[in-house]
Length: 318
Image (cartoon, rainbow, N blue to C red):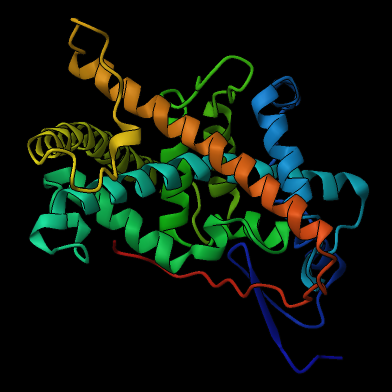
């Protein structure tokens, strides 16, 4: 017998009630499959295990009605894939936030604080604007809030989310080593996992992988150009602040790479220093969020919400 809501769309599959047993099971399993050796690498990564513990404390493991796992193994897979998604998105969000701070500082004297992309040029401006649009439109997904399965399946719901995850995988080499004992693994394996999921998805199919990889490569280059221009703007801001006698706010002062005495940094060293500051900022954000969660827990439990996020597939021409 059909329910009042006749359709359910998930992972590119549209079902009409009553669903057959196979269809019901399909929405309870992750579209991604992890190889055993990749699971071992994740388990041995101290940095990734820290993220997992923090997410377990902050986000919990409550599933919506459409994604109730049919087994403990399915539940663990959903949670692991949610945590991988979070680990990939967080550094990209931090790059955007730090770039926004630098842009706001650079443009403050011109009164253009509402058009932050104007601080950048060419590919960097395009990458900044693209990230800005995605973060506004996909705020809940970017924060990995809500049902873990909804977060995971939403990766395949539209072109921008797929492109962001692929780009984050490509950037993971540059963002790997913030400090000893707190490094994340390379996420090259997740690129392969995502490609397999796209090939098996009835909406995207095998022909889509090459096209989206090219778009992700373009976004990666745009983000790297954005990083280079952030280094340049940081130096401009530092010189301007020095001339003004330090009276202006030094918004970007804490994210400029330190220059050793008498040894000017090369462009590559400046970019790497800026990237390392980004990753350190990620850990600072994680630890601050953990402290906030502990405080909220000590203040008393809040009533849980049962409403699941509604995610819909849509194409994008961004």
